[in-house]
Length: 169
Image (cartoon, rainbow, N blue to C red; front, side, top):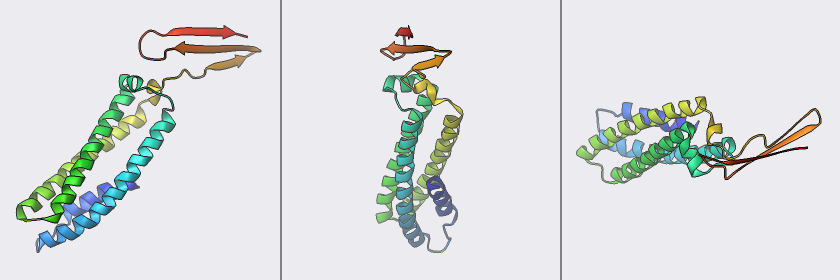
């Protein structure tokens, strides 16, 4: 929902600029959108962090980067940070909006829209990829069948050679 508010607001501000008195409209609409966009981005960041922790409860930076899922996540996060910087720059630009600044403001909104589209595309890839590659632990650690229990442990649990230990009970 927060993504819809953010991206829908971007499209609305880009498309709805009136031909008469665009500077006044951009200042008002830009300030209103800026508040909603900031609130939406905070919600998107918070839910993204919660979902990542939920889907990949134990990971190291090394295990995250070595997986395709983690690499896509890193690109998504970097683009998200770029969006935040564009948004901060846009908020400052709204203070002294002139004719040339209005054109730059609108161009930056378009850039933000295309970056948002790429972020959504990456989010789609993340849904399709398995976050299990980035998990640092071995699941299940213990399994029982026909009165036999097997435990598996690996150390140091990082990409490359690991020592595996198993025991039967």
